[in-house]
Amino acid sequence: MTAGIIAGFPAQPIEEPAAWRPEDLESDNSWTHRLSDKELDELNEALVYVRARGLSAPAFKRTDFPLPLLSRRIKRIIHELEHGRGCVLVKGLDVAQYEIADLKTLYWGLGVHLGVPVSQNAKGDLIGQVTDSGREYEGENVRGYTTNDPIRPHCDSSDIVSLLCVHHAKSGGESIISSSITVFNEILRTRPEYLDGLAEGFYFDLRGEGASGNPDEVTRHKVPVFCYYDGRLSARFNQKTIEDGQRKAGAPLNGTTLDAVRYVGELALRDDIRFEMRFERGDIQILSNHTILHARNGFEDFPEPKRKRNLLRLWLNLRNGRKLPPEFAERLNTGPRGGVAVKGRDY
Image: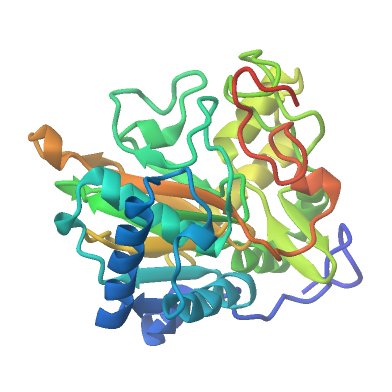
């Protein structure tokens, strides 16, 4: 235990539902929601309603996709994301009964009730597809979701990230989640000298998708890994983009600072901190990027192209999300809580 305040953080471990360990998720499954028959019927009715108006994803708003019954569960989900454990698993959707276009429309309808979608890549995709395109994650400016490689612990650049499993892998591809609050508490307990550097932050690599279009663009300012603001701890972490960003900024990491960054990643994968789950078809995983680090095991696909591992992804900002300071909220050079810069748009 440390004395005094380090880097503006509380001197004592943070105790809240988001500071969970794997046994907490195993012993209490209240973070898992199974859609009822009535809720599934309502989703199908909303799909028919929006389709009859000639609308499809992503060209409609939540008012176009009425969910009077399911909206009550969605409110509970949002509360769990912001004030609970920060992770939710929704089950019960039979994806096999939908064509992919209808599935995207249904998923988009759910998503716009959860929050406000933001762009995930330079093409401006609001619904991403997490599937292997034959690239290698360690390549220059390659994003992990386009590969079948293991992906190290990180969080995405929005308030929450949601994944809908259309097809799971033949083997591997398990999702790994960790509480970034628990990781912080462990650093406070074991290596408090790391916190000043983590709070100062780093230049993150934008992987060729920055506002300038420069393949070596990094964030305009250092983004903290841990930020304590308005009485709440939030995290922003991606070891690869931190190390690549500092190298591109001409200040490669070394010594204690490099050790601190790698320690965050190591803790997130430690057996007493990480929780592993295997996606089933129709599962929807929803995570708070502020309190959850997520990773993935490498995977092998089925040989049939139609059975390739495929997850639909949404990046969403909550309509009444936590307060964030500007130096933490702007992570992609597109303004506070902005998405990935879209080619041809000024920022």
